[in-house]
Image 1 (cartoon, helix red, strand yellow):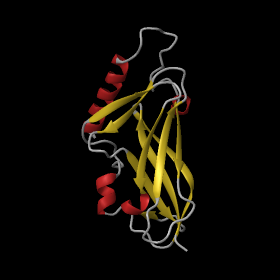
Image 2 (tube, rainbow, N blue to C red):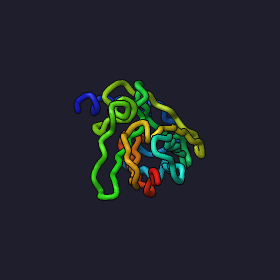
Image 3 (spheres, one colour):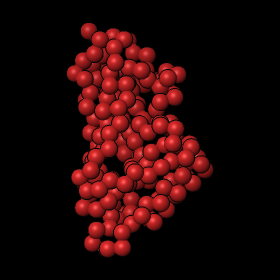
Image 4 (spheres, rainbow, N blue to C red):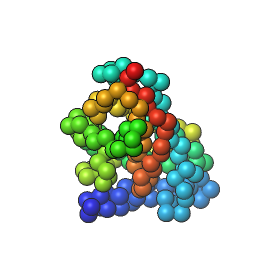
Length: 164
Protein backbone atom coordinates (compact mmCIF):
# COMPACT_ATOMS: atom_id res chain seq x y z
CA UNK A 1 0.00 0.00 0.00
CA UNK A 2 2.89 2.34 0.81
CA UNK A 3 4.45 1.58 -2.59
CA UNK A 4 1.15 2.42 -4.31
CA UNK A 5 0.83 5.68 -2.39
CA UNK A 6 4.40 6.68 -3.24
CA UNK A 7 3.84 5.84 -6.89
CA UNK A 8 0.61 7.82 -6.99
CA UNK A 9 2.36 10.78 -5.35
CA UNK A 10 5.21 10.45 -7.86
CA UNK A 11 2.72 10.27 -10.72
CA UNK A 12 0.94 13.37 -9.44
CA UNK A 13 4.27 15.22 -9.03
CA UNK A 14 5.27 14.31 -12.58
CA UNK A 15 1.92 15.56 -13.88
CA UNK A 16 2.29 18.79 -11.91
CA UNK A 17 5.80 19.38 -13.28
CA UNK A 18 4.51 18.87 -16.81
CA UNK A 19 1.78 21.54 -16.56
CA UNK A 20 1.95 24.40 -19.02
CA UNK A 21 2.57 27.97 -17.85
CA UNK A 22 -0.63 29.29 -19.45
CA UNK A 23 -3.54 29.17 -16.98
CA UNK A 24 -6.10 28.94 -19.79
CA UNK A 25 -4.85 25.60 -21.14
CA UNK A 26 -3.94 24.06 -17.78
CA UNK A 27 -5.99 21.04 -16.68
CA UNK A 28 -7.07 21.16 -13.01
CA UNK A 29 -5.66 18.55 -10.64
CA UNK A 30 -7.41 15.20 -10.23
CA UNK A 31 -8.54 16.28 -6.75
CA UNK A 32 -10.66 19.13 -8.15
CA UNK A 33 -12.04 17.61 -11.35
CA UNK A 34 -14.07 14.51 -12.15
CA UNK A 35 -12.34 11.82 -14.19
CA UNK A 36 -15.18 11.87 -16.76
CA UNK A 37 -14.38 15.56 -17.41
CA UNK A 38 -10.86 14.54 -18.47
CA UNK A 39 -11.30 11.15 -20.13
CA UNK A 40 -13.74 8.90 -21.91
CA UNK A 41 -13.16 5.16 -21.58
CA UNK A 42 -14.55 2.70 -24.10
CA UNK A 43 -14.18 -1.03 -24.64
CA UNK A 44 -14.90 -2.95 -27.81
CA UNK A 45 -15.52 -6.68 -27.57
CA UNK A 46 -16.50 -9.41 -30.00
CA UNK A 47 -20.24 -10.17 -30.07
CA UNK A 48 -19.60 -13.86 -29.34
CA UNK A 49 -16.68 -16.25 -29.25
CA UNK A 50 -16.17 -19.97 -29.52
CA UNK A 51 -15.11 -21.86 -26.41
CA UNK A 52 -11.33 -21.85 -26.24
CA UNK A 53 -11.09 -19.04 -28.81
CA UNK A 54 -9.73 -15.55 -28.22
CA UNK A 55 -11.88 -12.76 -26.82
CA UNK A 56 -9.79 -9.67 -27.49
CA UNK A 57 -10.99 -6.48 -25.82
CA UNK A 58 -9.72 -3.12 -26.99
CA UNK A 59 -9.76 -0.56 -24.17
CA UNK A 60 -9.48 3.03 -25.40
CA UNK A 61 -8.92 6.11 -23.26
CA UNK A 62 -9.53 9.50 -24.91
CA UNK A 63 -8.65 12.92 -23.51
CA UNK A 64 -11.91 14.90 -23.64
CA UNK A 65 -10.56 17.92 -21.74
CA UNK A 66 -9.48 21.21 -23.35
CA UNK A 67 -5.85 20.70 -22.23
CA UNK A 68 -3.24 17.98 -21.80
CA UNK A 69 -4.16 15.09 -19.51
CA UNK A 70 -2.05 12.17 -18.39
CA UNK A 71 -2.52 8.46 -17.92
CA UNK A 72 -0.27 6.22 -15.87
CA UNK A 73 1.04 2.91 -17.06
CA UNK A 74 2.90 0.17 -15.22
CA UNK A 75 6.46 -0.61 -16.22
CA UNK A 76 5.61 -4.33 -16.08
CA UNK A 77 2.75 -3.90 -18.58
CA UNK A 78 -0.06 -4.58 -16.09
CA UNK A 79 -2.15 -1.60 -17.18
CA UNK A 80 -5.67 -3.03 -17.42
CA UNK A 81 -7.72 -4.59 -14.64
CA UNK A 82 -10.68 -6.87 -15.33
CA UNK A 83 -13.25 -8.01 -12.79
CA UNK A 84 -15.28 -10.83 -14.32
CA UNK A 85 -18.55 -12.21 -12.93
CA UNK A 86 -20.64 -15.08 -14.26
CA UNK A 87 -24.42 -15.20 -14.83
CA UNK A 88 -24.95 -15.95 -11.10
CA UNK A 89 -22.89 -12.82 -10.29
CA UNK A 90 -20.09 -14.98 -8.84
CA UNK A 91 -16.63 -13.52 -9.33
CA UNK A 92 -14.34 -15.48 -11.67
CA UNK A 93 -10.71 -15.52 -10.53
CA UNK A 94 -7.99 -14.87 -13.09
CA UNK A 95 -5.84 -17.84 -14.04
CA UNK A 96 -2.04 -17.79 -13.67
CA UNK A 97 -1.65 -16.02 -17.03
CA UNK A 98 -4.25 -13.43 -16.00
CA UNK A 99 -2.32 -12.75 -12.79
CA UNK A 100 0.73 -12.01 -14.98
CA UNK A 101 -1.16 -9.75 -17.41
CA UNK A 102 -3.75 -7.86 -15.35
CA UNK A 103 -3.45 -4.81 -13.13
CA UNK A 104 -3.51 -5.99 -9.49
CA UNK A 105 -6.66 -4.99 -7.60
CA UNK A 106 -4.53 -2.92 -5.20
CA UNK A 107 -3.01 -0.84 -8.01
CA UNK A 108 0.46 -0.63 -9.47
CA UNK A 109 3.08 -2.31 -7.28
CA UNK A 110 6.13 -1.38 -9.36
CA UNK A 111 7.36 1.69 -11.18
CA UNK A 112 4.96 3.67 -13.35
CA UNK A 113 5.32 5.91 -16.34
CA UNK A 114 3.21 8.79 -17.61
CA UNK A 115 1.73 9.22 -21.07
CA UNK A 116 0.44 12.71 -21.83
CA UNK A 117 -2.52 12.96 -24.19
CA UNK A 118 -3.35 16.10 -26.15
CA UNK A 119 -7.03 17.14 -26.35
CA UNK A 120 -8.85 14.54 -28.47
CA UNK A 121 -5.89 12.12 -28.45
CA UNK A 122 -6.51 8.47 -27.54
CA UNK A 123 -4.46 5.59 -26.16
CA UNK A 124 -5.54 1.96 -26.57
CA UNK A 125 -4.68 -1.36 -24.96
CA UNK A 126 -5.60 -4.81 -26.27
CA UNK A 127 -6.15 -7.70 -23.88
CA UNK A 128 -7.41 -11.25 -24.50
CA UNK A 129 -10.02 -11.86 -21.79
CA UNK A 130 -10.08 -15.60 -22.61
CA UNK A 131 -6.32 -15.79 -22.01
CA UNK A 132 -6.72 -14.28 -18.53
CA UNK A 133 -9.59 -16.46 -17.25
CA UNK A 134 -10.56 -20.15 -17.55
CA UNK A 135 -14.08 -19.75 -18.91
CA UNK A 136 -16.83 -22.32 -19.26
CA UNK A 137 -19.55 -21.63 -21.86
CA UNK A 138 -21.96 -19.02 -20.55
CA UNK A 139 -22.47 -15.30 -20.16
CA UNK A 140 -20.15 -13.04 -18.23
CA UNK A 141 -20.03 -9.42 -17.17
CA UNK A 142 -16.66 -7.67 -17.33
CA UNK A 143 -15.67 -4.50 -15.49
CA UNK A 144 -12.52 -2.92 -16.93
CA UNK A 145 -10.30 -0.53 -14.99
CA UNK A 146 -7.11 1.39 -15.62
CA UNK A 147 -5.15 4.07 -13.78
CA UNK A 148 -6.08 7.57 -14.95
CA UNK A 149 -4.34 10.59 -13.43
CA UNK A 150 -3.90 9.41 -9.83
CA UNK A 151 -7.11 7.41 -9.27
CA UNK A 152 -8.83 4.33 -10.66
CA UNK A 153 -11.61 4.74 -13.21
CA UNK A 154 -13.73 1.58 -13.18
CA UNK A 155 -16.30 1.35 -15.94
CA UNK A 156 -18.88 -1.40 -16.51
CA UNK A 157 -19.75 -2.72 -19.94
CA UNK A 158 -22.25 -5.12 -21.52
CA UNK A 159 -22.39 -8.86 -20.83
CA UNK A 160 -19.73 -10.87 -22.65
CA UNK A 161 -21.27 -13.91 -24.36
CA UNK A 162 -18.84 -16.84 -24.25
CA UNK A 163 -19.65 -20.00 -26.22
CA UNK A 164 -22.93 -21.53 -27.38
